Length: 89
Image 1 (cartoon, rainbow, N blue to C red):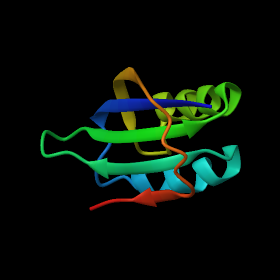
Image 2: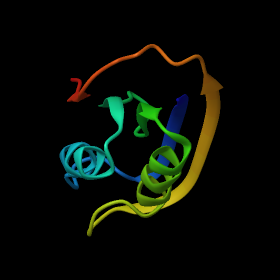
Image 3: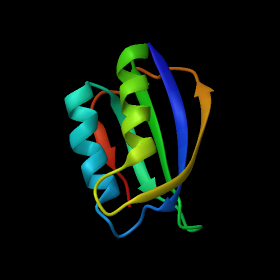
């Protein structure tokens, strides 16, 4: 199991990014959370097996229709054993 913190920059708020990410997280079988940041970016923590996390990161790099991702930064974290994927406010 691995865990990544992800910051997604671009036109990623008010385009359904967080709720689409929750659907994709369930599809890929990853846990964690996602939220909007005050600076206009979206921040997430994603946990799962390496292949599933990589698949989710690839999706986050594209986002849903209407989003325009300009950059994605990641940082390794210690896995927490979290279950489920939440959209935070």
